[in-house]
Structures are given as C-alpha cells and as structure tokens.
Length: 130
Image 1 (cartoon, rainbow, N blue to C red):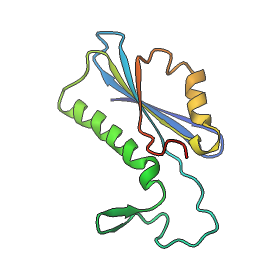
Image 2: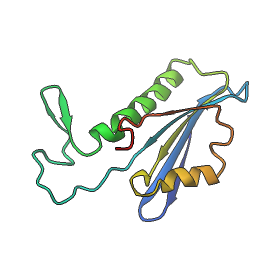
Image 3: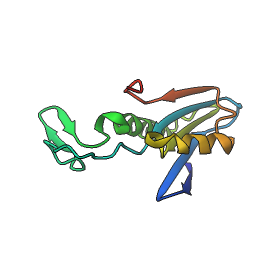
Image 4: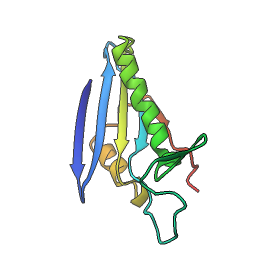
C-alpha cells in the first residue's frame, strides 16, 4: 500500500494512502480527521485519553468524533489489500489534521491537488458539525 505522511505546522501531519489497480482513472476517497477538540476545564467522569470501555460504550477523546469512522476506513483498505480485492481504479484514504481548528489539513491536501481527481468522497464525520 502506498502511503505518504505530510507533516506541517505545530506537530501536525496528514496521511494519504492509496490502493488499487489504476486500470481506470476513477478515484473513490475516504476522508477523516485525526485530531480532537481540547480537553477543556470541566472535570471528566472518565480519563479523557484512557479509552475506557464501560458496558458497551467506549469513553475517551475522539471515540465518537471521529476515530471510529477513521478506523473503519483504514481497516477497509487493509482488508481489501490483504484479500487481493483491489478496485480497478483507486481507493484513497485522506486522514487529515487540523479539522477542529480551521480544517488546515484538508485545505492543504486540496491545494496539493490530492482531491482534484476524486470522483466520490466518503466522509466519516458523525456529528453534522454541531
């Protein structure tokens, strides 16, 4: 699997990975962000970076927004690659940084031309920006 790390700014980086046969010029992209909002000043009932499982729930920064979606996208690429079920075009993962503060990572990938050839984009954001 081809992957490229795009470091920038204050300890931030985007990750771009791609699989496929590239027999066609069709590109399906999966997009998700790797950062979370800050921990804030309010007391936590669970360790914010602990990924604590209680019953059937996972508590921790990013559990809902949106690391589960990003993990599903990564697993999909890995399993397709391992099973040899590569698309005739390309399947591209765009894992971005800076979404919580101005979408700097997404803008950076757009300026680099990494979305110009994308035919369809699946965004794993579960929160509807509220």
